[in-house]
Image (cartoon, rainbow, N blue to C red; front, side, top):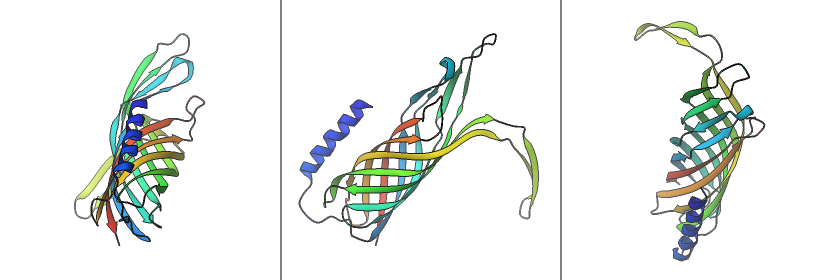
Amino acid sequence: MFKAAVALIIVLVSGAAWASEGDSTRRPYSTEFSFNLNYLESDTFDGPNGSYLDMSDDVGLGFAYLYNYDSHWAFGGSINWASPNYKAFVKAEEGAEDFTYKNELEMFTLNFDMVYYFLQQPFTPFVTGTLGWANIDTNIASGRSYDYCWWDYWGGYYCTSYRPTKSESGLNYGVGLGLRWDFNRDWALKGTYRWSEVDIDVAGENPTFTSWRLEFARKLY
């Protein structure tokens, strides 16, 4: 993670030096919609009594909407989700056996985003801040399953089952550092290194996540 952050800083400095003079292509009072690819880095979360959870890396998806107030400031929101695999090691109480458990996390965030672009040029570094809500579902059953059926006029009679799972929700906040390139009038490309924290209790601490985001932005006027 440290090497990746250093590499991004080097690119930011060289990019700022390379950027040519001229007006930014981010027009004041314009909007943009983007499709996001989010690479979530692997991590380990410690639990009580020596238990821990190893989360694998994963590529998630998302969408964002931004309003460019001027060439520097932008405000908007984003929706992102990912499904990393995990392996949990559970340290049992005395007299019981330790065990491991494998499954998949389902992570969903809904955020308000603020962006500040340093340069009034097509190529610029930027910083971003995020505040929102996150839900993390462990896919561990937390109750008995329920069967229910319904009638579909087009397909007939259907039945399925639902089983509740253990999930946690909390405040999500984070910061990011990135680069933006407006390569023509209608499209822009953004890359961001992000750190975020979710306000839920995991062995007395809030879990933190680091990720890389690649955004394809369509500018609307």
